[in-house]
Amino acid sequence: MNDWRPTATFQALQLRARLNAGIRDFFSNRGVLEVETPVLSRAGNTDPNIASFALEFSGRTDGAPRTRWLRTSPEFALKRMLAAGIGDCYELGRVFRDGEAGGRHNPEFTMLEWYRLGWDHQQLIDETGELINAALALVDRRAPLVRIAWRDLYRQRLALDPITASDAELQQALGAVRIDPEGLTRDDWLDLLLTHRLQPHFPADGLLAVFDYPASQAALARVRPGDPPLAERFELYLGPLEVANGYHELLDADEQRTRFERDLAVREGRGAPRPPIDERLLGAMQSGLPACAGVALGVDRLLMAMLGTSRIADVLAFAFDRA
Image (cartoon, rainbow, N blue to C red; front, side):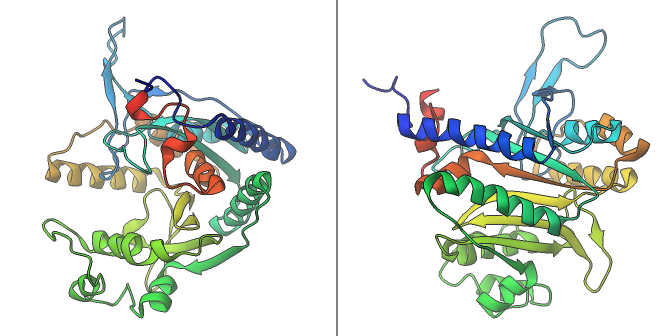
């Protein structure tokens, strides 16, 4: 039995170390502060499509809840730091998501997340592209950044307007892809078109930023009024791999609470756990979250693209089945 051995080669682990050092140099040269925030929190992630790990603390809590949640992202804590006045900052560390294990997923993985005061999502797209190309330079590669609006992506590549098309037209556009329609929403069909019809055909050496999503997919982004209103967010793809997800951040605490409560209602309808809302984040936003843009980048996904592998195990010292 050799299952005690690492799943990544030593060369891959050495590249990870070089990438981590390069990330820190990148932000140090730009005056962005590295911080560390808690891995355990009394609040969880309400996103209906993300499952959190929970555990019970056995020590003294002084009346606080014993149930604590492993973070799925450092976002909420970093935003509290921003509201307190820390300025531009980033964190490079481990995050955890339940139920995600497979070729491209591991229940614990490395996330880089950073925030820029006074920026919008378009400015952050530029910097994210610069960081990725600095990483690719470690393996003598480069990927010119190309932008496309979310709506234009569907119109140009599927000859389909995702805003005006009927649900039946969205389903028909999946072609030979067969999906059980039970319980699926319009946004689910749009996501399926992206993951099954669009994403697999993104050029292997391309760096594609898809921006301005429908308001129904705003998550924690601000929504720009218009016809239709648009969520000021972006996703960035290196080849067919999604490597980053960024927002021109929502600042309105009341709107954020409404979105959290909407998430919990969806969870209840699915019979999924209802993690506590992060009241401290809402308190920080109420006190004044500065105008900013933020992005989360999957370091393991970036390493996969750098090494040209489709297996996340190839970039992890010990993947889930050997942990």
